[in-house]
Length: 130
Image (cartoon, rainbow, N blue to C red; front, side):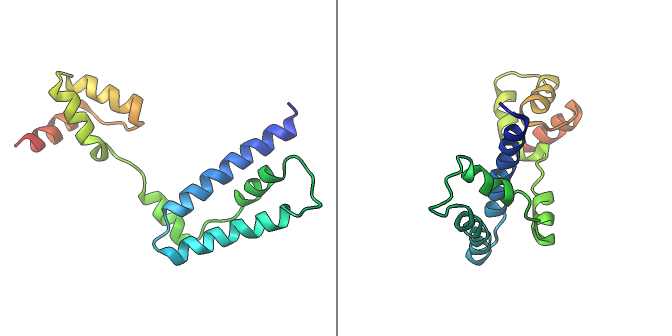
């Protein structure tokens, strides 16, 4: 595959992720309509019947990836960052099955991409048990 195609593919994947993020961060139906209207505008531009390029669908999402998020969407996206507290129920199940706090810490880092010390987990899980 050519370098140009690989760049287009990566850009299209980013556009699809961008679309997913923007839809999930939409506060209401009007916000969703704005995002979908932006996407449809690109689809109509590239989906003309006389456009027979093989990668026109990838081009739509590639260009969508370049659309800037509004300031509000950026703030919402940053607040969406997960912490160990979001995974406490799963960690509690593992603890009930006999996992040590160090194993839980390693598990959270490996599977949830969240760094948390064993002491922090111990304190948080003991509070849940009370």
